[in-house]
Image (cartoon, rainbow, N blue to C red; front, side, top):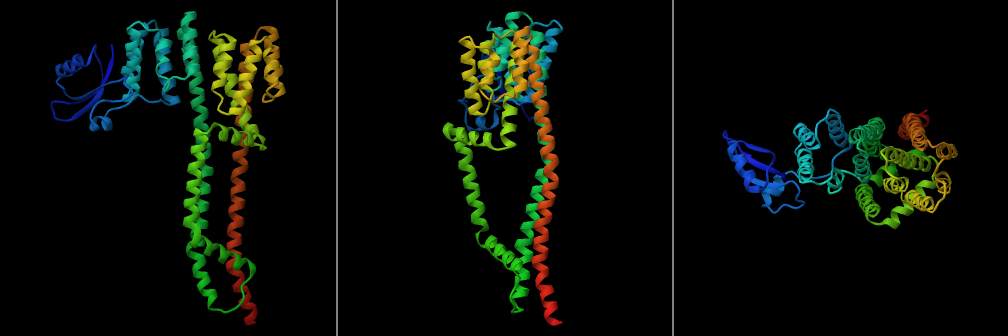
Length: 409
């Protein structure tokens, strides 16, 4: 049955939102009335654009992309219910009823309505690309073909949970450095905006030449007071157009990413992150029974760095033409020699899937070590930089006083 988002008024006069399943809109409204609810608006969960009035457009929940945490949540529940022996339709109903967010509930019920109509699960998920990526749909399709959908979904749940945990770990690790940067900028800005001008007023009455550090600090403070707002606005404008160009201009984005790949440290991080994502996704798809060529094409699409993605697409074409996979990946120059040897060993011994898992695990561990080391070095580096700035300001303030004491003696 199709799913409908609704806004209704209960007997106590309070508005109530939710999702209801019905054959059509008329039956949905009747079901709401039978539940002692007065429907104000009704909207099909599968519609991309609402034809309701402006209030509906502001109030009704929309089908939109879901986070990795939400994707892992519904995948884990769905896999558990299927493993317990429930049919796909009943399992989707239970997952939808368990979901507490309207957009997630509407998404699950929309998928269920298509499945009830006779569509395959993978084909249904493909109609919601904003929620289910290509690799997810391909893995589900392979699970349907093999008859082991529950096991494949458990693998998907593990994979999506691991992605979410890695994302959360990086975000949590960046909180402290970001706070240090913001506090440092705030302290320096306060000193230059309020402390230094008062110092300038006092020193201006002395009528003596100022030390070089003091003159530099006064000039810097004056420049910030005069041009600070304009510089800030210009920086915001540049950042806006840079971000817009990165999103819309593929040539510009490619050049920026090529430059990032050449930078020491950052280039290694970008290579490791993208090749690890490719290896992990490829291992997951191969384990689910997706053909190697199709799996390589899907995994390459997940690579966000355009130069690496294009190199992997060329590698997939070489494998299609008969080249060995490890040789094709070696020619991309983005994989480490150890990883190439592991993949070659897996190809030779018929153990490609576990070797790809090992390659992905090794690259992810390298990436985590790089993040930990970078953050461990970043904190003392910021403290040293902040200390140097404060020392500069203190010396610039105190040197005229020392100079005045020497003249008075």
